[in-house]
Image (tube, rainbow, N blue to C red):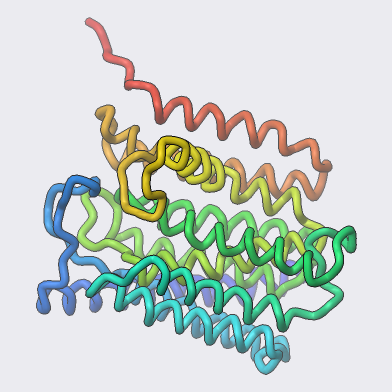
Amino acid sequence: MINFFLYHTLWFMAAAAVLSWGLTGITLAVLRRRAILDLPNERSSHTVPTPRGGGWGVMLALLPFWIWALWKAGRLLQPAELALLGSAVLLMAISWIDDRRGLGPAVRFAAQILAVGAVMALLPADLSLTAGLLPLPLDRLVAGFIWLWFVNLFNFMDGIDGITGGTMAAMGYGLMLIWLRHGPDQLEAFRGAMFIPVALGFLIWNWSPARIFMGDVGSVPVGYLLGFCLVRLAMDGGQVAALIVAMYYLADATITLLKRARRGARIWQAHREHFYQRSTQLGRSHGRTAKTAILVQFALAIFGWLSILWGWWMIFPAIGITILLLRWMASPPRVKTA
């Protein structure tokens, strides 16, 4: 099974990387021509007006391969899969309007609830996040809340050059490895694998200094699809593995939002208080901060895979390396002395 996966998937990954790179480049040219720029402000981490909307290239490269895989697996017409794809397109449209004109949080959140709820309502009844410990309606509610939170935290974490593309590739790598061992479900492994090349194609344009930003048109639907893959893994008995793969994003975003909520700040507003943003404010470059976060995310992907092989206790080294990363980001860089 793994040999079949490798022989066929590597070609698609190469094609997806080229497609993502090319479509992002085309998007960049269009955005520049139309002067659709993200202007620096007190809440942003960039200092130069930069085109925003590179998520078009990412999503338009990703979705065709997902559709092809579903068709080959005979699952394209399953109600939950159709709802997933349709909702991803809906979130792209809503998020693009938000990128261009700005939408209130109520409209954005309502669209996300609709997208998550539609899939949750249509998933097969034998899939359970809590392994039957909760009644199915409550189980779906808990899973939907977690998925909805991941969509938003993924969007929150798109704040410096390279971090979203790099961690997206690392999470996809983890999902691919875990499904090849856990299932093996080749469709789910393929879906995870395809995040890698589309992220790398985008990173060519987004690495520091970024020539284009992903924007909500990318970060929201990508977070939606990645969140589905993680929830789907958890519903198949891989709760610990899914938690480990998402651990850095969960920790950075959740701790930051709790701190803001405690002092009464509006948690839905843009800000520069995430750990990775504090790292750049303390003097580290975007590239160094993103590179360190990506390396840790790849380590978490390996720990997630090892949790399938060796057991749930792999969560402890995952927690340890996440704490070390957050402490490093929150600490001033060491000054070299002569």
